[in-house]
Amino acid sequence: MTPAELSRTVLHAVRRAVDEGELSVSVPERAVVAPPGPGGRGDYASTIALQLARAAGRPPRDVAEVLRARLLDEQRFADVVVTGPGFLNFSLHGTASGDLVDEILRRGRRYGHATSGFSGSVLQIYCRAEVRAVVVTDVVARLARSQGDIVRVKGTGRPAPEWKSVLGADITTRGPRLIPDRSVTVSPVPAPLDPVPLGRDAARWALLHPAAHDRPRIPGDHLVQRESNPLFRVRYAHARTRALLRNAADLGFHPEPGPVSEAGALLAVLGDHPRVLAATATHHTPDRLARHLVTVADAAMPLFPSVLPRGEEKPSAAHRARLALAEAAGTVLAGGLSLLGIDAPDHL
Image (cartoon, rainbow, N blue to C red; front, side, top):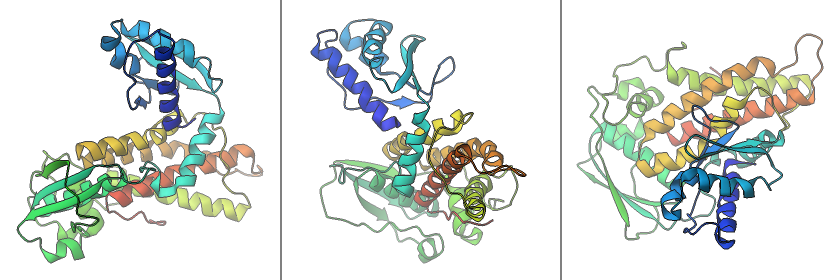
């Protein structure tokens, strides 16, 4: 069960409780599911009971127990428990990891993007002719379009040609000329120095990784190949996944989604990727996506040593499943870097 399917399942439980008269609430459009926080259990958790409690006129734990009784009917759950003030915690059967990996590999770099076409929303972005504002606007537009929005950009002043030719920041308005229903002004703390000499990838990371209210480091060692460099860790993790696929092909086996033990942290962050993309697009915060990619890379690294057979060991179903999970991690990293306008090389 993927996070999107889990969200739909939770909403179905809410609808059943409303139809059967146990809850008197309006069914929300979506139920947020995410990896459990401190004190949580299982694979995912939801705050839906806390969200509905006031409208239902009941304590959150009571609402959670009502929903839990219906969710336990779903045979795809190994267990559903209530923790804290009313968090619903879900433990999925072993096939869940294979389902998630299969979805990521099927969707490719567009995993987490909207699947229903135009969202019905038109976003107007205002930005001034300052290099960091232009690069951030470029990514805010990419993220909004990934969620099905139409984007219009209106700038003050004329961007320098090298911001597009070198940094790849394109704020050209595309698509039909519809009336915007929402707007945002992109105005991050300006870059202290010209980032163009850093080149496209390092400059974009330098401008995008810090939060908008933080001053970027320019010049910076954003392409230096060492563990303390977050961009290097992200791109290195992606390159490792590509190397593993090449080495596995040489050994005569290929990825095949299936259960993977001891990879809960990686599966959780991969499953959370669509929510992160949606939140990043909603709040216009590319730095959130950049930090998420670092988290994915760090969660993926412990998996890699166990992907290929060792010594005289023959490739097994477990190796194929771990290879598929590694490929899925690389796919998410490549897709996220693409939205940031940064290259994901196969070799470092």
